[in-house]
Image 1 (cartoon, rainbow, N blue to C red):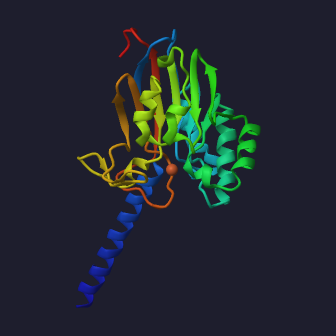
Image 2: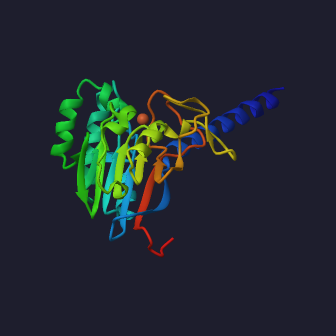
Length: 270
Ligand SMILES: [Fe+2]
């Protein structure tokens, strides 16, 4: 009886340890997903690394593991697509600023806010600190970089994406917009490529079916949580993000860095 009891306790402890290791790895090992997209109106290829939905999470001290991964991908610029902080927690502001500063030392960093920044009462000051850390904040603003115009749509204005559009030669424009569910608006505004996040991959993913469980603004079994989507001439890439917000744990959904090679339309490269 005693031996059976001890074996049961040991079995339960081993099972619990295995589960904890599985969850830790699934929430802390960064996966890089690569895409190639062709865009009209550009002369040279551009490599972008997208960092989304960090929510103040640290991968190593000062986010050095994340920075090493990003630097190893050799991007021409980094696009942060919102929710680098959490709406309530003040602690993660320090981590977010350290990360912004570290990434800015690698290559230019463009940033657009998400819904969490919009709800954070300290966002005005945080935004100023981001700029001081070397980040270009594109809250309803545009920047010409590497021969491409990149437009950022403020986290409060995603729903009205058509309000912020550039009328001429639009298909060589890249839009950074946090929320993917407004793809119709982004396509109507004529952007060639949209980089988005917000859904955290649906937080828990169903293996083999490759579907997420839930995303804010889309509900259960949401359509726009991950991957490449097309609407007319617009391509949208959704990052599953790196951190967590209300759901504290990811399941079958590793933190994700996105690499996009943007090539001139008509180039032979795949
Ligand atoms: Fe988020």
